[in-house]
Image 1 (cartoon, rainbow, N blue to C red):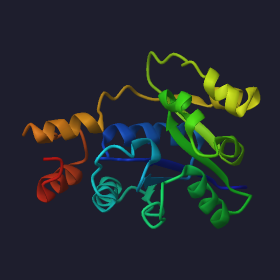
Image 2: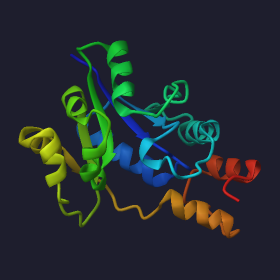
Image 3: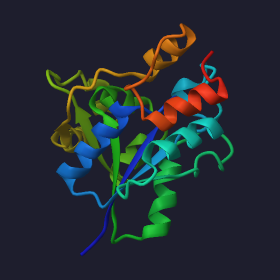
Image 4: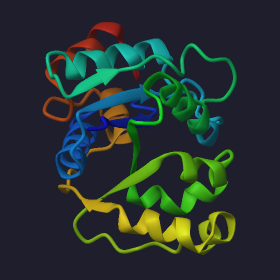
Length: 204
């Protein structure tokens, strides 16, 4: 029986309960043995934003999932020079786990139209299975630009793998704003992450 590995990339600036609940919901539905959280060191689509250092984001991710056997945290993208391209990360895990493993990349369903601009996306959608997390009330976005890049068959696969997840109205942007405003972020992220933010003076 082949293994099934989930990869969940993102800025995680900071990681919060929305990320974790969504990832666990996908893991349960798809039957993932493990979910690897991969903080992006230099995400190309966020090149204009002054992000928290990847070292802090890795530390917060590790604190968030400490003791949970479903999750692990990888620093693979922080060790690589240049932009954090998903296809490079997928190829890394394919070399490690071989062709027998099924590798799944978890994204938010609202990101589907943006895939059209991802680096080497035509190759990417052939090398990895994307599973998209939807929220209650989600409606299929306009994917015509993506269709023109990857073709009808790939878009059909992507849309077929949209999976419902709970509505968790938490965002990293809101957490950063609340910290700057000296407002509590308790219950938005694991206590160990909140303590780390306070201890390190992040987002102020």
